[in-house]
Image 1 (cartoon, rainbow, N blue to C red):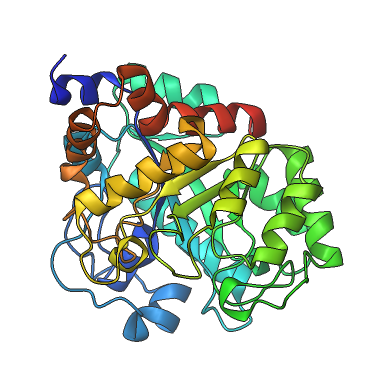
Image 2: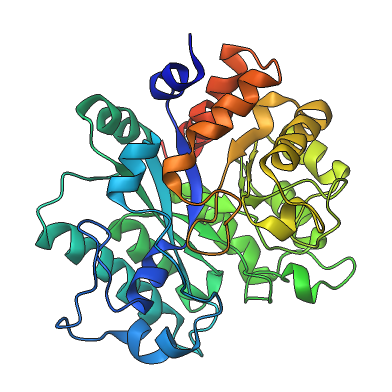
Length: 341
């Protein structure tokens, strides 16, 4: 089978993008139709964040529903990063999710908001893009498990415990304290996420929080976007011991397209494939997934339409069809089945 045909035949799941906030900061840019909607009233994110967005908004957006279809991405995790919400984390999260849901409804888009893993397969069968609602930084729940339960009812299925800086649940990787694991609230949060059927995302957490979460969680976890620290020494990447521990937990790391997580001097697609090779050798192919970080710094590929290049590269390196199916989406689907149902 040709690489392009194999890619289209595979289930493809991307475990992280920052499209929601990015699109709002472009002037309520539509995920469905493209173009700004300046006439729409500004919400929390637009008023608070649009003029200080940390990633320069130059060039076209990297992912929307059209580009997902062109790139053969069946389902994407659409995340709202609430880190910079300045003690307004919940409102920030709700504003972002509300923007996305309104944008979809306003344009009558055929989209599946995936609440259980079967929704992903049904979306693929019917040709609809699948979306998993996600939030980065556990302060979105404002220290309340009742808020967590409300977010679950809204459709949120994945929450990252931190985003570089620390949260009420855990230390972030940029504020790591040696030997410090989850907070008391963090332990309660992870256990309640397990009970509800929500995926615990350990991207951005400190090493201490990483190991603590693996111990506390009764279900597999995800590291939604990051790479191998042995090949690129960045605090956002996982070292070999962490990769091995993630594998023992049955978890998955979504390989990120952020250049400075790939290589400090020469961030190319070949270097990204080197990371996939390394994770496979250390933790097994069952631990490898994809988490682009499109619209949030994942610029190694220009946009989602270039996703088939990953499959082409894996074929070129001799990966079997079974291995490629696992990497592109099968491994992430397995974790979702074991967590969100």
